[in-house]
Image (cartoon, rainbow, N blue to C red; front, side, top):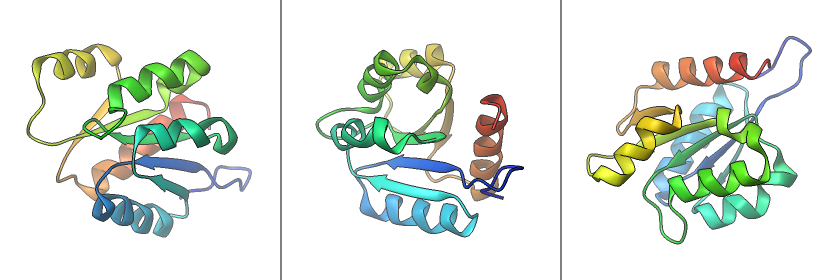
Length: 132
């Protein structure tokens, strides 16, 4: 499932400050045969983004240092194609400014707790829309 038609394993970057979430994503996505790199904040994600070259970026919106919306903005400044690679995770406390960002970004949004089947389908959709 995590490989494309030519046998290349697709890379997913998971960004969340909750270790339980990054561990869960690493396990689930690893079981789906994706290569997963997990970091605990947006600042760390920016440090590895260009070298890792993820096919999909799954990011929490609420994190210390750099929130998901700021990570998104900085990532697409570096490489506009990153805009199509983001999936955001949200909890129940999304303020008006953040909701406006999520509504206008065009990115997929998964609510915590998330459904594994829905996660899998969204990742496949992202990969297809990127031509992978």
